[in-house]
Image 1 (cartoon, rainbow, N blue to C red):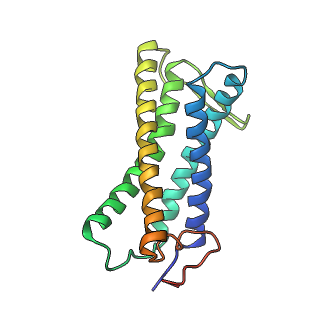
Image 2: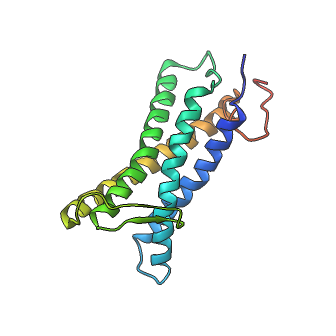
Length: 181
């Protein structure tokens, strides 16, 4: 029986976690100020949003070709459901955040320069109404994403500290959990 996630899934998980947490932090910080650092952070936020979208697509493809370990057999059905629902919603949020951000930027009439490698053109014409709607959507998805991340982290800590069933250890880089390994 497989007790831990394949290394490719663990690397994707932690790399995306670092990127997503930094993007959420930057996004929340940007809406609070118009300080001189706002413009370069906004430009970086757009570029890394594109990279996050590419990353989540690669992660989904990797997830489809890789086998994940089974959850503990004694886990209550409600917790199994919560774990699977949260995972699906996290992937949805990982897709919706950069897509809504790109559509929002497009509604402002701007293209996104990705490190000079390529440009994502603005889709459609400039529209203040569409921009405002997409900005609200982007914010609501971000708040939902934060809630899902807190649930995910809480679940991981519950498995690691309370149940001590190896679920947390199965996703750690280089770590083993003696309960399952």
